[in-house]
Image (cartoon, rainbow, N blue to C red):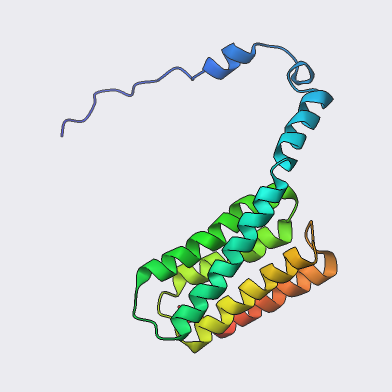
Length: 164
């Protein structure tokens, strides 16, 4: 492979700046637009909550299926990863920051532990139960002191049964 004789300096991409112009941010984003965007998001809250219930139930059913005799089918694990990921990636949008963090930890645990034994199943079940509780009790935000304790306990449980 031939080495270039001198570096090529590319001009910065200014296409977005050209579209926006030099107008102050206040002229682009005002309170009405922000409120309209927030309303559009929250109009989908019921759909999000229904999908989340479905995902949590899916995790529980997958755990039961694995407990009855895990055949090594990675589709089961992938389905569980996807359910945790969907919750993690959307919960914060609707104000469920604690749920997003719990789902993130649950997802990461499943990704790292494809061999499912009794200990791994207990940990995953704890994450599913935590998510179920968060949504049953409509715990928004970070959950305060209780949320911090929950995350600490889940982390301790994860560390105790981690095989990595």
